[in-house]
Every structure is written in structure tokens, then in C-alpha cells.
Image (cartoon, rainbow, N blue to C red; front, side, top):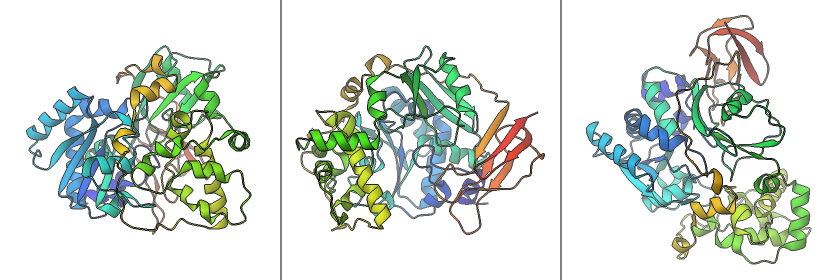
Length: 442
């Protein structure tokens, strides 16, 4: 098998975000391949540590991926504040003989440096067009954990493990490797908290991650971290606002100051994403909502809502409201151009991470979360059949069947975009539903 086939067989997807199947992404021809090691979400610590501990594997996997796309250059995007990791990456690229192909691109410590369109601009100077993706300007983006999984796929190892940071108002902050399909509550208890009755858990980073409605889920290939905070923390209250509540307060309070637009990362890249106009539109009952089609450009970074707005209003939720209305009406945004230039004030309006962390009330929790050798050995796992972009995986096992760690248990439907699934423990298939395959250890 060639590399793309190995990646497909190993079930590699984006190890964060939407979970786009990597074999499909690397099938494109590109000028650049970029590694997203920015990890711009506050408190998360996975990528910065993986690039240190697994530097050789990540560099080699990244270079392999770049060659597969025909990219003429491979650029590792990492914040310049991680000086020790940068020095290690530079030393290892030379030692591995890929220093003429792979280089390190240093990023400012701002949010959202890890937004893929911001990353493309910072590393190449190219602006992804409105409603576009990086390949439209000749770029393919993978993150550091995905690069690690690409290297392992080339060695015949499927994706069965996930690296996760536990952070927030907890006794133990740590980053840990767990089997895919592990009960989330088993991972959360590594924080030193047993009873979560007075705590809320954010699935992912504090900016874009949702507050979990219950803790009975299972780890997927795209989980990145869990931020645990007291239920009465201001960030939890803000993120728990319902759409009806947001609509009422937006209509009553917005003074059209434009701060949500002036600091919007996509607006600053030259896109016509203007949240203050969305807030204005909520005061009217438009028969024709096509004028709000630009809301589909929102990347949901939440900067407008959790930092920019001086009144603590909800511009992102206003965008989500109109996105839903547009989807129901079958209306899609039509870009007026295919060429964009970053706005001249961009360099002066990027948000420093430290200021963001202070605004979120997380300064006391902005501490290391060391990568540990601690292991989680769940008795039961559930491998979700749809944890990626595309069609759900189709089970290839039956109830009662014995499976080994790394054994393929679900496959991609014919002629579909999708991802294969593998058991992360050895045991017996105990249940199969439309949503998951359950394996019981022993």
C-alpha cells in the first residue's frame, strides 16, 4: 500500500476540530503543507508537548504527508513563545535530513492563531477566499497529533489512542494518553475530582468547546481536552446561555459599537464577516434573509462573544441563529470575489492570549498540564461510528466476536467519505447499535 492507502486503512482523521479524514485531505495537490501546532485555545497543552516528546515521529510523518501532496515546502506552525520546543524541532529536522524541506514558522501568541485560515495567512501570506478552504490557495493543513498518526500509519499502526489535556479548577492538571472509546468520566476522574455535581465540563477549549450536558459520553479520535470549572464560574454561565435568551438580550442591549466586527479574525483577513450587522438584523423580521448569508463565514471562534463585546452580548449566537435560518431556506453565501487582502489594521487588532485568559477569568488555571505515563484501562469501550466528517462507519464484526487491540471493527461505506475504526482494547464485542460498537475487556 502507498501512504494514502495506509492512512486510510489506519483510520487517521484530523485529531481536533471536525475530524476530516486525512487520506482524503492528502489526496489533493498543494504548494504548501502546514502543521497546525499553534494550540491557541487557552489551557490546552497537547500539541506543544507532543512536538517535544515525539519530535522525530511527527517531523517524519509531516514530511511524508507533504511529499504525498507534492508540496514544495512543509512548514511547522508553532507559537514563538515555545522556544525550547522550537529549538528541538529545528535540531531534529536537520538530524533527520529533512531540514531543506521542513522548516519552523513562528507564530505570534494570539487568539485564534490556530484557526486554519489565520494559520495559512501567517505562514504563507495567502488569504483563503470567503467560503473557501486552504487548498483553494494551495495549502493543506494537518495538526501535530495527526502528523504523529500519519507516521504510525506508515508503520502499520491504526489510531487506537488519544492524547487529552485535563485543565481548569482541578487538583491535578495533566495531559494523558487514553484508548479511543474510553468513558469520558473515567478520564475526568484523573483530575482528582470524583463528584462532579458542582462542576461543569467544557468539551475542548474554553473558547469554542461546548459545555457538556452530561458526562456519559466516550472519547473519540478528535477530543482534545476537557476544561473543568465550577458551575457558577462566569465563563460557564456565559456559555450556558440559550438561543432564546441570547436573542432577547441582543435585541435589547446592542449599541452597535462594532467591536465584534473590528476584532473578528475573518473580517481582518478581508472577508465580509461583520457580526455587528448580524446583531442589528436581529431587531427586524426579514422576509428575505439572504442579506444575512455572510453569517455563514463565521468560524465560531467566539472571540466576538467572549472578548470583544464590552456588554457581554452574544454576536456568535446571532450568527448561529441566522446560519440555521439560511440552512432551512437553502440559501448559500455567494462570494463577490475570489481575491482578498488582509485589512491594514490587522496587525494592531490581534488579541494576545494572556489578555484573553484574563478576560475569561482563567488566569489562576493557566498552568502546565504535564504529559504523564499514567494509563487508563477501561473495562468497556464504545467506538462511535460517526466521529468524523462523512458517512458513519459500517460494523464489520458481530456481537460475541473476539477482537484484539488494533483490529479493524468498522469500515468506510463504498464510494463514501469516511473513516475506518479499530478496537482500542482486546475483548468481546458486547453490543452494536446505529451509533457505536461496544467492546468489553477480557
